[in-house]
Image (cartoon, rainbow, N blue to C red; front, side, top):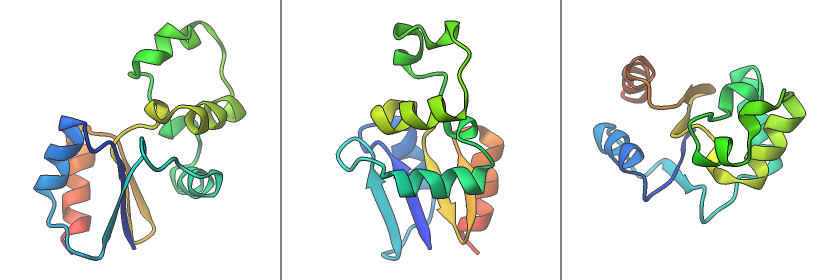
Length: 117
């Protein structure tokens, strides 16, 4: 299975998707219009090792909600991601039971290698 969780309006997500050779067998979920389900998030967290690994501290709401001043735990990370799509690191891509989180150059290079196999 190949699945991409992204924002279709995000230029970084668009750039990364255009760099991948995606075919018709790839599922793209726009997390703004199709919310992440608790089951999907649980699956991602199991693959990533934690909800924190999926949580974006770059989101504008992170500081706006003063979350940077709080000690968050795994339950908090999970709940915030489910409440507000912007807290999921983007893109998050699942390829053959491997997860690739975020837009770091090393992550995208590893993703490209795995995606094109």
